[in-house]
Amino acid sequence: MKALDELTFDNRFARLGDAFSTHVLPEPLDEPRLVVASNAAMALLDLDPAVAQTPVFAELFSGHKLWAEAEPRAMVYSGHQFGGYTPQLGDGRGLLLGEVYNEAGEHWDLHLKGAGMTPYSRMGDGRAVLRSSIREFLASEALHALGIPTSRALCVIGSSTPVWREKQERGAMVLRLAPSHVRFGHFEYFYYTKKPEQQAELAEHVLNLHYPECREQPEPYLAMFREIVERNAEMIAKWQAYGFCHGVMNTDNMSILGITFDFGPFAFLDDFDAHFICNHSDHEGRYSFSNQVPIGQWNLSALAQALTPFISVDALKEALGLYLPLYQAHYLDLMRRRLGLSTAEDDDQKLVERLLKLMQNSGVDYTLFFRRLGDESAEMAVAKLRDDFVDLAGFDAWAGLYKARVERDGDYSEEQRREWMHAVNPLYILRNYLAQNAIAAAESGDYSEVQRLHEVLSKPFEEQAGMEQYAQRPPDWGKHLEISCSS
Ligand code: AMP
Ligand code: MG
Image 1: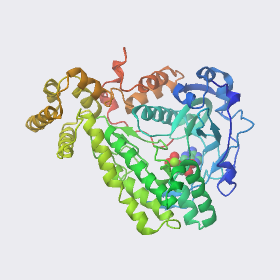
Image 2: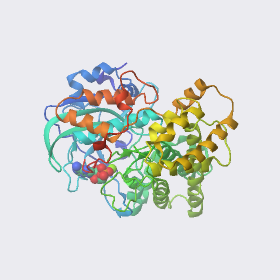
Image 3: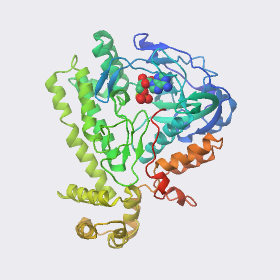
Image 4: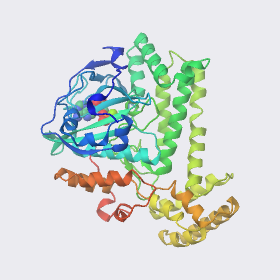
């Protein structure tokens, strides 16, 4: 285990130079204090969890102190926002502090979000508020615990610095960890600004550091693009299977590693609703829950366009063609497991679709349905769940098919069924209203609820004593919360 001053840096992105990022020092926040830290994320840096409680920890992650080997940089990128191209974006309020490598030899980007103005701040103030920092922290660590690829979060540091959004709030910083912060928008920036040399340098950087196995392939860049397509298909399959709605799938928010990235007005579904739009600025529902699947492909096409200098259009098209079938395969595989099925049958897709339609029409809680389905035998479970549905005849017809399907699947004991199903069906998810409760307490200076919620969500599949209140449907006030998109 390491102390804070024992981290080892190797700032590979910074070494690409000024065409890729700009040196900027973090602007400190007043009266920094630890809000929450993730022990699991601390372990990625080999850090002793106890160091989070020391004053220097809050100073380091609120811009007061910096390691001598850190090289804080604001990265430049662009991207398609809501379908339209924005020629220049970039880290407007976040800084890549440097890259730390751990004892296992993994590199982790240390990215401090809310660190003040940069050349890419445009009209913004360079800050992040406590509310949005807590949401990003909780979501990163909760998605990871669910097995969904994501950037991670080390900690949130709060402060007394006033920050203006719809009202006065307090500034905070979140320390994000990821093996890379390169986005689709990085490639788009160098493509549309017609800087082929730098674009080639970026492509080499990503290939060498993040897709070294693709080097062995006859066409390394094509192999890398295929891998990016595959990872995105798998990530989005997991979002859909677990009811995660990202909300701002702009290409500047899409990671080159196929991990969930940049948390804004995201939400997990409470009631199942395929048309759910979590981002209140998304008037056309471009990023609605069910649209995430085609948008994933749209975003990959935008990346493909930016890669045309390296890969033939035909090869890119062929690779893009892998997306939907791969998505379908991953999604169906996960949904089968959520239903407690270990074999595959042709009609399984229809079984899932029929269930989702019934859930949609009756406003059934997406997470609790699957958890309860695994509580006991299929026979007993569907008999109890029946009460949640309005269309009883429709549910009975589905239940009949399901019970017969379970029967054909194999002869398992009730205990076995429960164990398998509970291992893929979480009891606890980051419901918006739970985040809201924790944020309200934190805004009045009590961080214990954020910490408790983070703890509970770090073991989402394990029933935890005394935590029943985190495994409930939302109360009426918490059902359709308008989550502010300002962050
Ligand atoms: P986002 O919607 O958070 O993905 O941000 C889109 C772009 O706006 C990125 O280039 C951000 O760096 C920038 N941005 C967002 N909020 C701020 C802010 N408060 N100050 C400066 N730049 C910001
Ligand atoms: Mg962003």
